[in-house]
Amino acid sequence: MPEPTSATPPSSPTPAAPSMPPEKPSASATATVTQTKTKTVVAVGLIAGAAMGVAAAFALLSAPKGQLMVCKGGPVQGKVCRSDRECLGGRCVASVLSRPASTAATRPATKPTTKPATRASLTVAEAPRAGKAKPGIVLAGESNAFLARYAFHSTGATWMVNKMRLKVGSAASVARLTLINELSGAVVANGVPDSQGIVDLSNLGLSVPRDSDMTLAVKADVKLLTAGATSGANIKVTLKDDPGTFQARIPSDSSLIMTSIGGDIGGADKIVRKSFPTLTMVPLPSATLNLGTQSVMRFTVSASSQGDVSLKKLTFNIVKGTKAVFKPAGAVGLTPVGAVGDSTLLPGTASVQGGSIPTDRCTQLVGMTGSCVITVSFATEEVVAAGTSKTYDLKLLIQGALAPGDVFGTTLGTADSVLETGYAALGSRPAPYFMIDSTNNSRADGRSYDLIWSDFSAIPHRAVPGDLSTRSFTGSGDWTNGLYLMPDPITATLVK
Image (tube, rainbow, N blue to C red; front, side):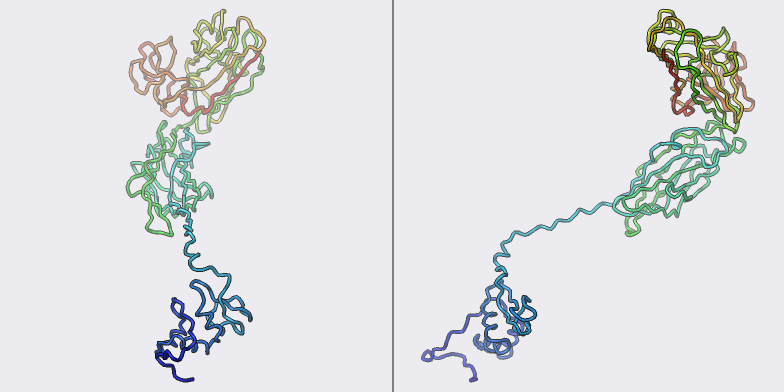
């Protein structure tokens, strides 16, 4: 082949060479241009044609912008190519299926959708007060007395709780606090309260899996009265939010640390007693309402095995769906309450007050429907020995006229909403009408409650003030009311 010249004379026309596309040539083509250092575009095409075939070279040079070259024929048909050599016996031609670059460029961009990242968090709260977690009474000397439950909930990550601070009320009454994982039942940690009731727990290693819950129970070993516990002490526990006393972290990211629970989280009231009574309803011998003396309620009082208990005052609420009236059974100086199997009623007094209707409409012959209240005060006290039970009847004299469908409901319960422990004090109503006074003084300034009882924790224990005429409170200060004693009232109903 003659060496190419830099120009062609006008008298010797030469066939026009294909025009070069505006895009950058392939690497091999670029290398050829660099080696020959020629300005003749035709020579570049001819040299490339020697390597990959004249037809493929012309196809490559004439491919529209944005169009792909693919193998046609051969074992790799459809493969993107730049020369026939890459097609292993096939040809490298312009693809008729590819879209022009201009069309692709005008397609609206699709914005990628991404799910927002979940923020990692850990919440701590008191678990619902169900079962033993409700406010109530714990016994002196009791092991693993249930105090509170705390719920931990993780979101977005697994959390590791490493330390916390608990504080118990009346530290002198508690020997030890124990933290328990409710799911596994395993003891997590325990500690002895200091003089302020503080127990700091560290190195806990409690894992709260991502988007899951963990519940911890706090229990206490309560001291005996002889070892420092106090009857009436409230050993309520609190999960504290003091600075530096709580820590939780995300194991996968040590920079994420939680050091506050958002404020102190208190548990329910738990009152220490030497012993306590349990009151339960017993079915009546007859559920039919009749005229005459009739048992309108029957109930059992059981003392815990740790000690005797005594009753001083009971309150019964009557809902009268009849025009018949009633009076306490028994003579003067006797209550309408008596032990089942014993025909003798207990000494004391009973008074009737109106509720939704006037008092005289509860007890007079011209009656009306509505509510009334009967208060029973025992002259001394009704004692139930440790580990034993007694069953009692409330007997009333039903008078007047009864009609079919008349209803007479009796409820033994307590509306006492404030806890008080003190002396059985005489009230201003006809004696003996007892109240509780936390101060041993000579004034009738105690508070009236629906139910008054004692756990015999004082030594000596006394049932009544020493001098009824002067109302001197020389009795014992181990009397309390019905708060936490009866979570649910007990009710008996008679129907005509």
